[in-house]
Image 1 (cartoon, helix red, strand yellow):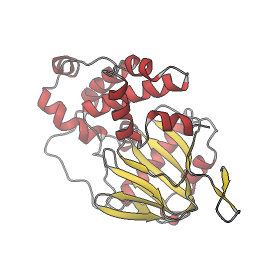
Image 2: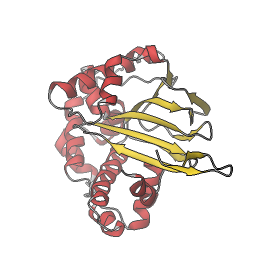
Image 3: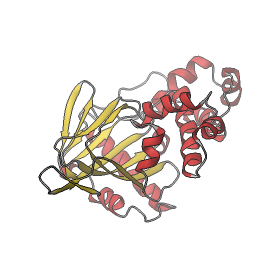
Length: 278
């Protein structure tokens, strides 16, 4: 972590964000991050966010309450739930985190509805040590069975810490049919497909798609598309493309549209996110 002299001449962490992405696999992203001073603005992901605080005190507002996550404690955030993030002390905090696609969790659950963890802070002994090992080995590839292992560990943890058993549904989830909608969006998120196309590829009516997509994958089709657009934009930004070109390539109306969506999703502007990469 960078340091800077304070008013009394001692070295303290320099303010800002530091982000380092690890090796990823389809449906799983890993990140090591530290934050001093400036907080993450309120934002939401379309993935499960399952992280562990390693240093300092992490605070975040989630579902109307201010939470504290101490070293060794985990936090579990459900897709599409708004949250922020800030250091609980001047020293800042560091953490590592999985971002896991709800579809991968859905596959690991065998079609059962996604569990909801109401209390987002989990004690150190409440998580499998294997999950922590996969975060500590950030650069180790997640391929083949390793990817499935992490998905199963995440799914088991979510079910274990869900506040109550998932309610039975009157209609079974049409997971395979909904997956065709999801795959169509993911194949080219810069394209805005008419609803009639979703009906045709899935064989479901638009109301069933709207009702069941979130239950199966944790977010709406519109939100899912936005997040995949942001994936395209992030890749373009990493490749050094100007922000305006990255926005157009990802299917956003313009640079300001990308900036608004980016901050809503990640709590940082594109410029701050790019500057924080190491």
